[in-house]
Length: 251
Image 1 (cartoon, rainbow, N blue to C red):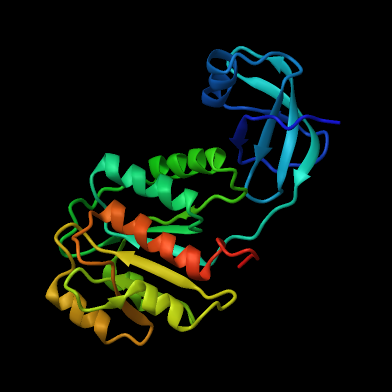
Image 2 (image 1 turned 30 degrees about the vertical axis):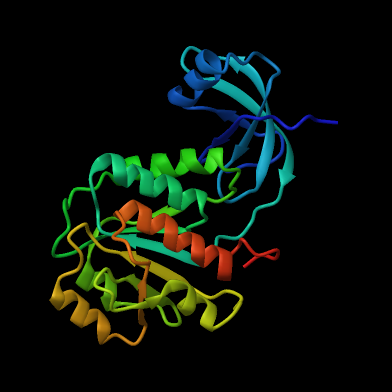
């Protein structure tokens, strides 16, 4: 019987039985210098496609660790239908959005440039790294897709059929989020996208344009003004609790 290792790492390689995996320098340093692992120690590996596997350390190279895949212990799960679109904010706080959205089960992260967006520069590689690390930590088998920044106009122009866009409206123009999500009850495979605007809010022109779109529903997140990262966590938690994978069965 194989004891389940406590260390999990995300890799981009395809995974199959007895395959040899060579870790990158950063991951190798983590196993050797931080976690002090030795030859024959076990590590969990996942790639978001092929389930979760136990692997065994076979050798230490100069700047890499070589592992051999031993056994699949969890089959691959499907991604949720929950996407997050958000106006980019300062570096440390956007990192927090990527981390918490991953922990809460979001399957796609989309930076959206609005009229009042604080910064148009987004390090998507850094976001991806934060999402990968969060997936390792929270026992998730999938990792969110990170989309390159897009203007609000282009974001709205080719909207997927059947997907509902929930817009966090800080002006009070929306209904309480619990009423909106709970109104239709527990619907399997409901496809939601949450859109959270910048610190200065959406412009009046943007709000007017959003109001005209049939797939948009404005939501209210309570009586207090929330920072962007707080709004993200609050809204996603409600969606997951009422209509998502916090239910006993899978979405």
